[in-house]
Length: 217
Image (cartoon, rainbow, N blue to C red; front, side, top):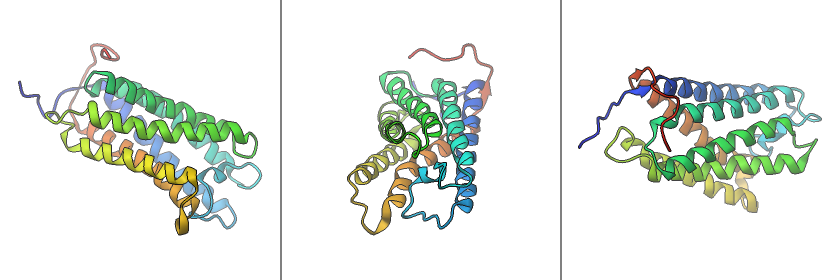
């Protein structure tokens, strides 16, 4: 049986999608604001987390608070959009990994790089790696071609792959003339872009009142 290309979504899916959009946009805005306050900040040579360094970034609290908020909204958003994806292990593991990345983002804000470098580094890695793997799993197994997800399957897989390849380059420090800041942004940008695009897609689908909060795994 052919699945409708525009299924009815649980209304909670719309709430989750909106939360993800707000989370991403406020984080982007916070980075821009914090950059203006940081003396001689370089997008190519400075790490993203330098914006939250309490000894170097005058507006560190803007960045640290914003990335923590992004993490919270990611965790909540993932739970609320859960039912929009095809049930199965790919959905369960993929979305749980994105949720883990959200929790790690909270820790990035709680532990600035200059106050607890070890905790910050671990948290950052747990933002990057699970996000990329999560997108690969969702695109590969939770977005069937005969559904409304068809146009986004290859898109999701490609973004996950870009994140993971850039992460390997970043970890091994072979960024060349691009600089560490540029490569780190290539790690992060695909995940933020995915959240914006997928959430916008979900908001465009008709909603119905939910019969339950989350469907079965």
